[in-house]
Image 1 (cartoon, one colour):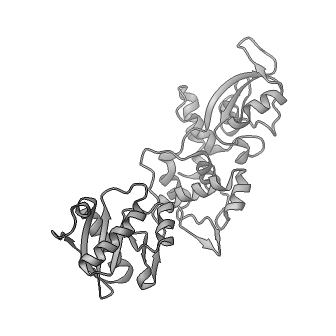
Image 2: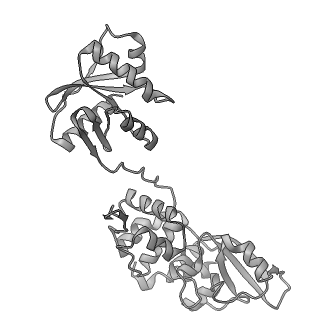
Image 3: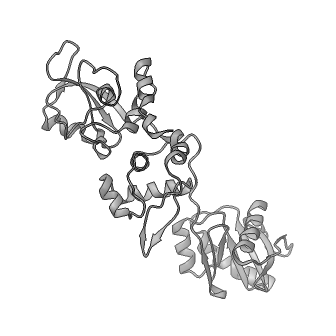
Length: 329
């Protein structure tokens, strides 16, 4: 609670250049249920006395109940500006408070004082993923596309979603993630949200390397026809294409995991066995569509590197490392 009061003071000073001079406040004459439920601070806002009120717990119906308590505090203390102090503002709670004309202060996000016709909004900071968290498939695809030389800066959500064949909501979450990590900067043109990367090439690779993961979810041995335009070369077959590693005995290919059941039926794929010599393939199912970044029916260098960098075969792991050499990282 003490830290919340300090954050409110710092926020108003940063946003308005004003000192509120907040001090914790306890009035022995207040009803005990108010002192048990709220933490109070007194100060000044734009020359007027202000009372900041922080709930010790924010439960269902809290905003409606606060209106009654706010009026009681005003009458008892003679302070007209009574603001609810919150450490964060869930969207549903924010709508309720604006509709009910409840003044509130959320440090770093918003200050709403209907009595003073004041509504300062800042983009609420998204919680950055923890250091151990990995990118989701859509975020990884977008980042790899840029590292592979594709210029996506300035593209809006619809264009990005169409480019990678994903839902607009998925792409919106991707931009949230990149902006939270300061890999991208917030950018709007009118009402359109657009991508603006803040780092590139070597710096981008260094910023994201620890969050990238192998796209391979599962490997199956199958029999059947797998056309290039449906299942690009992957695994050791793709590695042989890019490096001096010899071709594997059977082709390795990749498809998106989401299409496995559909392709299994339409292509009449059957389970393969070690003694099969005809139409056998090692089929990888990926967390994203390998065709999105593939060139000439071969998966891209970076996704391939991620899929094989920890291969137990030392020859394969070394060849996977060579895939990065053209980038100079």
